[in-house]
Amino acid sequence: MTNHLPSPPVFDPRGTVTTAAVSLAPRVRSLDTLRIGIFDNSKWNASKLLRAVMSRVERDASGTTFTRYTKESFSRLAPDDLLDRVAAENDVVISAIGD
Image 1 (cartoon, rainbow, N blue to C red):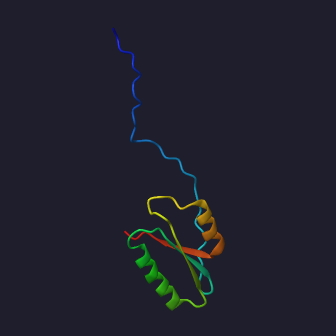
Image 2 (cartoon, one colour):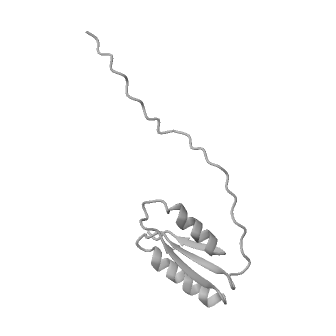
């Protein structure tokens, strides 16, 4: 009697990744008077790092406004509606990974 069970699929760790080219946003000449989004990915030290960056920008630029945003979990993607809101409400966004 022969056993005709299907062979399990074999995972190839050398798989290919396809990506679309994305261009970078143009660099701003100055942060003066801009609406700056502060995007915290909720990792342990991200908030600390972003507070230091905000302090530096406040010292060096004039008339800027800040709006803070925080992801619910660093291990999950940010929801599209949050990303859309961040993009619509700001001229530039600063984010950090604070491991």
